[in-house]
Image (cartoon, rainbow over all chains, first blue to last red; front, top):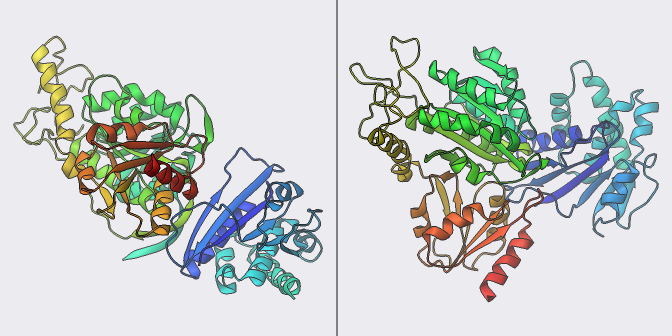
Length: 178
Length: 368
C-alpha cells in the first residue's frame, strides 16, 4: 500500500537526514520501495526545510508526495505551509515546543526537542527522537530497519547517543498513541 | 549479482560512469548537478582516476576532450548555464570525433533561470546547440536506476560512435533518492584502435574511424577545421567538407535503429503518451491507474537520434500526447513523423506534471 509522508521544519534540524534515513530503512532493511525527495532550495540554517518520502510494497511510479497520509512538523512556519492543508484522515506528529497551532486531523504531540536537550543532553538528536516516535506510532518502517538505517547514517562515535534518542522516541510514540 | 542500495540519482550517475570505465572527470560545479562532481571527487583518486575542478565550463569540456585523446574515458556534468558555455567545444568534439560523456541535470532556463528546479528545456540545445550540421546521441533517465544504467550506456555509445553522448537528466531524477540495484559487472564497449596502415580519419563502412590514441606512436593532427582523412586542414575544399560533414552525421543517424532504446506499453492503444525523463513517472502512474482505457506509452530512453520507427509500434494510435518540462521540444519532433494529432502538454516552473493534469489532458484531447 502506498503511504506518503511529509517532514517540515527549519534548516539545521536534520529534516533531510531524517527523510533519507527513513527511505534507507524501507529499501535496505524492510526490503520494500521508497522514494525520497525534497524542496531543494538555497536553505541555510534557520530557513524553511521540507522533505518527503513515498513508501510502497510495489515499485513506485509517481515519485512526489501530493497529499500526505503522515506529517512530521517541527516548526510553526512548516505548520502554516503544510499543516493547515493536511487531509482530515492524516496523522500529524508535531513538536509542541516549536509549533503552537493544532491541526484538524489526528495529531500526536512529541516533545522531541525538549527530550533531546534535557534527557539526551544534545539538542541535535531531536530529529532522531522524532523518527523513533514516528516509527512507534505509525509503523511506517520496522524498528529493526530504522535502527540499522540510523547506524548507517550517523557519524562514528555517536551511535549510542542516536540509539538512545531513537528509543526515547519509541516511548513518546507509544505514549502518544495510547 | 547485484547490490541493493538507496541512492541519489546524481550519485548513481557517477557510479555508472566509474563502472563504465571513466577515469577522468573535469568539471565546474553547478546546481543541480553538483553531486555528480562531488561523487567523482571522492571516488576518482581512490581508483587511479583524475578529478579536476576547472575554472569554468569552457575549460571543463576542453579538459575532457584532451583526456579522451590520451585514451581515457572522460566525462563532465553540468546544467543550463554551464551547458551553454560548452557549446563551442561540443562542436569541436563532434568535428574531431572525440568520445566523451556530458551529464546535463536540467534546470529551468533561459539564463540562470531556476537553479534548484527541474526542466527539460535543453533537449533541442543538446541536438542543435553547437553550430554547423551534426549528429549526437542523447539519453534520458526516468529513475535512479537509469541514472546508472544509461550513464554506462552513454559511455558505450560514445566509444562506439566516437561522438559526444549526453545524459539529459532533470533535477527531479538527479536529486531523488530511491532503490537501485548495482550490478557487479556491466557490459563495456571500448573505442576501436586505429589499424596500422590506415589514415587517422579514414572510416570503414560504419563511418567510424579507428582511434589513434596519443602516446601510442601515431602522429595525428587534431583540428576543428574541415580536414581530410589524414587530419590536415582542407577548409577550402568543398568536396572534402561535404564528405566529412555527411559522414559525421550519417555515422549516427544511419545507426538510429541500432542506437534506439525505448519502452512500449499497450501497443494496441489509441491514445499514446510519448515521454522521457521525470514526466514518464507521472505518465506511468496514469496508465497504471486507468487500465482498459486505451492508453499506451512510448518511453524514450534514447531521444537523439530520434527513433521515429518506434511511433509505428502503435498501429491504432489516433493521438499522441507529449508531456514535457518545456514548451514542446520533442513534441515538435513527433509531429514530423505522424499523420495524427500530436498534443504537447508543457509544464514550466520546475515541478512534475501531476497525474490529474495528464488525465485532464487526455479527456480534453478525446473530446476535441
